[in-house]
Length: 477
Ligand code: ADP
Ligand code: MG
Ligand code: ZN
Image 1 (cartoon, protein in one colour):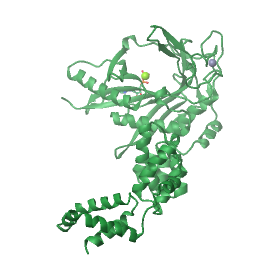
Image 2: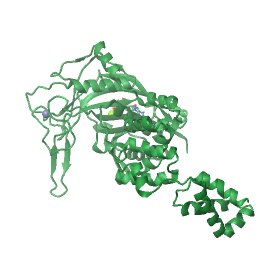
Image 3: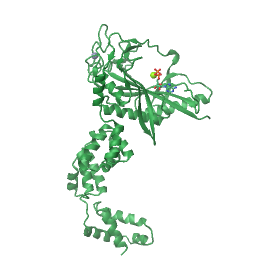
Image 4: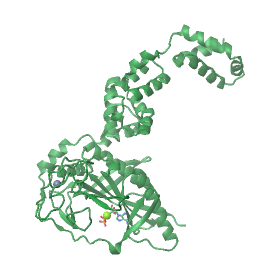
């Protein structure tokens, strides 16, 4: 078998978190009873006139600036014509040849190397409604609440070479959109979704192979699996002497299987033409500069700052800044306890694991950043041992109680008094003659066992350094 190189380009759709829809005053909120966020404009009644939502343009420009794009001073909207029951106008208002933003890039780490992926364009367009297939009656119902919710489509250059790169690209993009606060990026609700364009070519070949496009993936896991599936399928086809057809495909994440939806032959001819009801979008330098000034500190800049200001390792810094929410939590806790590495360790360790298991975010947890800071201070000033801190943390996570209160109520204050610890050490040593003999015979493991017994006897409260010191003293007497 030949060795193949994978080529991937992504088209990402993000719903913008504007209050209202793209061309009318209806709410753009997710959920609600079907067909309650609708009016004659967003349901495409004849004779209505759309009015462009200025926020949508502003958000798209923010996305463009944050991804190093050129922002068009003159762009326009076009009709993309096709019929589908969830698109009552029978055309989608989008942008064709003059998008708002183009020629940008984003950068991220893949392993140890810095990767740059080009952004071909970012344009604004409207979302379609939703079809609901009622399994009981066999009917298909239409919910138009999502019709004309503002979207941006971010099209990448075919610059990615593996599933890992595509996932990292998507994660970076998600984090940028979250930092900008222009999309809630809830993939499970469809506010962030992507189409994967993928081809393969023998290593060394210049020309790209024929690509397929797998539509509408809405979780990182499904992006990963759909890519792996499609790579293998294309290799199998080519190895079997068959050819790859340019086609649109679907991915069934339950079955773990991708399949062709339509081929190029019956691809739509969208008959794009300029939207006659909407004026061109003309942006001044002042307008763009104002937006530029408002941009928040972006994740890659924050990452560098955490490394220099807090002396965090690159890995920690990257992990924490990848989410704006986590970064905010981190900074709040650090401002109180002044121990960045300890806060980072909690956030990336036990805390992350427990959040993940409960499927909630840091701000949804009962532990306030002030309280995590308090726990760290209790550990730093040796009031409690780090083993006890782990237990207190679990209690905090479950009850939201104050760290100090838990320590007081349960009497968890660390024992540092040498006299008290020495008593326990001497008792354990006298009760474990075999371990003492093992230690004297050179088996260092015996120490670990004895320390464990002493800690257990003290209910985890003995200061471990003192225990170690006294134990060695007693053993070597
Ligand atoms: P369309 O409008 O038909 O979707 P585009 O030219 O806009 O076509 O390309 C869509 C996406 O496909 C882009 O993200 C681009 O990077 C990617 N792409 C184009 N050619 C290839 C290829 N040969 N292999 C993989 N991806 C490709
Ligand atoms: Mg496409
Ligand atoms: Zn409406």
